[in-house]
Length: 98
Image (cartoon, rainbow, N blue to C red):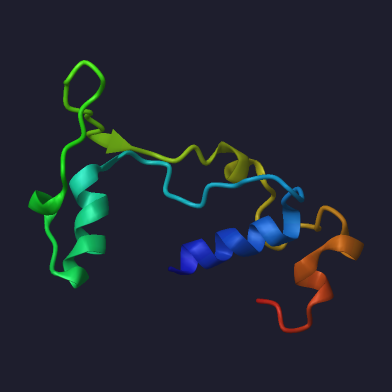
């Protein structure tokens, strides 16, 4: 969780307004690895997922998925000079994360 918080702070400090940034590991994740922990607290398992078919009647398969984190990786590391100190939400907010 700490890595995600640091990533969001980095985006606030150095990101471009209006840009979308993916906060993720950037490594491929199996569908089961991603969905099972989200479903378990609700008493659901992977068997509860209904398979969807494409127009030709074939099962849609997405075995692995990953987020493109290139834009996040290109931002300066935490602690570097902000993009524009006057417009940086983290600098303007005295309650912001250190």
